Image 1: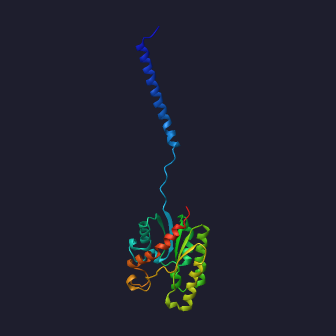
Image 2 (image 1 turned 60 degrees about the horizontal axis):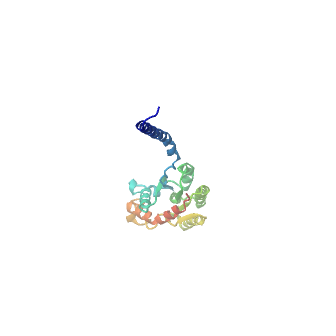
Image 3 (image 1 turned 180 degrees about the horizontal axis):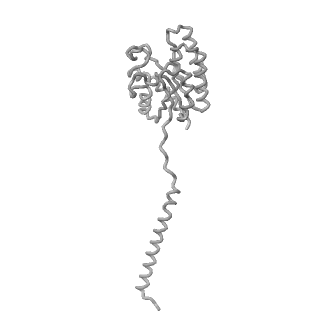
Length: 231
C-alpha cells in the first residue's frame, strides 16, 4: 500500500530522532575512553629538596623558629622566586662525625642539593683536624656518589685553641673546598662572629639580627648551588 507524503515525513523524522538518540548513547559510552586518551595535565614543579646538614648554628639555637637560619633562608629563597623544601638536618651540638652518622637516614628525604655546615663543635672540643677532615670528606663523598651538589660552609677554630691548631683546622676546609663540584663559602659566620650586637649572650650563636646577616651573606652561594641541580 502506498504511503502518503505525510506518513513518509513522519517516518523520516522518527528515523532522524532514532539516529540522534543512538549518537548520544554512543557518545556517552565513548566519553570515558576519550578522557583516558587525553594527556594528563602537567604536574606543578616540585620544590627542590635542600638538605641543611649542620649543628646549632644552622638549627637556630636559642631563637624562635621564624628567626632561625633555616626559616630565614627559606623565606629569602621564596622572595627570589625559588621553590625550595628545606630538609632539616641541623642538630645542636653535632660534630662532623654525627652528621656523617645521620646522613644515610636523611638521604631518604631525597635531597637534590646539600648545604654542609659542620665543624664548629669539633673545634670547641679540640678534635684532631685530621679526624674532622676524614668525616667531612666522607660526607662529601656520599653526596657526590648520589650526584648531589654541595655547598660547604667554612669555619674557624676558637682562638683559645692556639695558632698551630687554628691553621690545621682551617686547612681542612681549604683542602675540601678544592674538590671538583664543591661550592665553598669561606666562613659561615662572616660579619657576625665577634660582634656582640649580632650574637646572643653566649657570644657564639647569632641573635635574630645576626641570623639575618648570616642568610644575606650565604644567599648568593645557595642560589649558585641550586643552579647546579639537575632535573
